[in-house]
Amino acid sequence: MLQKKTAVYLLVASILLTSCAQLLMKIGMTGLGELSFNLHFFQQLLVVEKVDSLLFVFFGLACYGFSMIAWIGVLTRIKLSIAYPFLSISYVLVYLAAISLPWFNESISMFRFLGIIFICIGLFMITRSQSAKKKSR
Image (cartoon, rainbow, N blue to C red; front, side):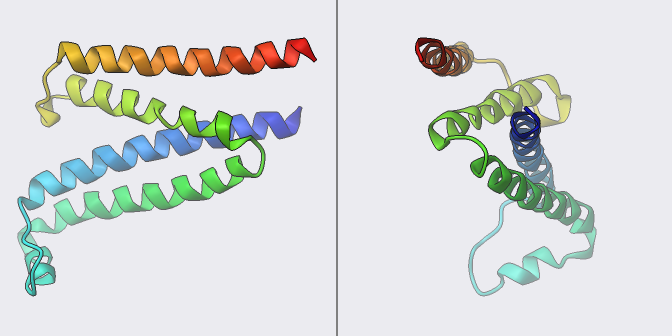
């Protein structure tokens, strides 16, 4: 039972950290502006006025790192066919944050909202199929 509880905590941590990573990196990259990937790439990043934006990017990358550590723990405890679809919850969380928080300036789209609903339905079907398998044993 403790093993299952730990797996759920790690899965939730991975999802939340991945979502935070996306949001933090978007805030940071918005502050940095469009970057050119050429020989002067790193010079563009070292502009003093953009240090706060770089910190958002750095913390976003750190969240990704911690998310991967949690994900490794998930993979040792849950079947991949069950765990992997749950990562799509981060799409839902990021979208909801992007339309809710004013500094992202995102608008609600009917098709995106329908996509979110389909993701939720898909996750529901996956979890139901697993519980049905357990009951038939």
